[in-house]
Image (cartoon, rainbow, N blue to C red; front, side, top):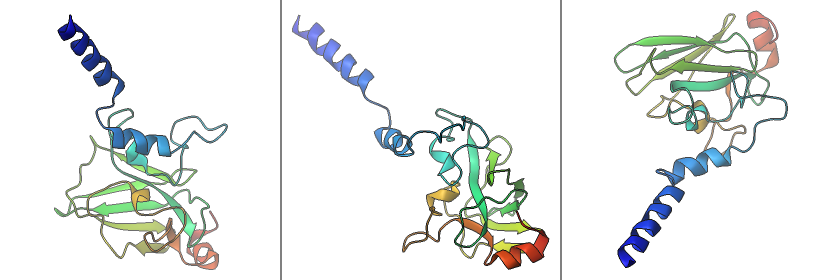
Length: 170
């Protein structure tokens, strides 16, 4: 009888626990969807995409992020080309959508780290001064505001005038 009780208690405990509580907590920390925005290509701009798009609960992506137009702004940039080159000199490009989001499906490209990044919009090109070392989720480093631990959002130009002269306002 005690064995059956212990087995039932073990099963109940195992079923109530996640296989990865840290991952579950990271997903929970993202919060609810923005009002009126359904999950899809336009949701959660600026958030670390690969927390969900790691293949456990959503389509699996190898690299994903959000591009803004100007340093210090969170305004999305539609139509920016994100060019990535990995350690084996394999390259892939993606284009940002209406909310600045871009993504690369894991089945289409699996980079070998480190990865170099350049973003182009019109005649403006911003090259990331560091490399992506292991996490293809841009917002893993590029938080919504700059701080001592984050350079802030991914951007193409330092000023709106530079962006405008490069190819028009976003």
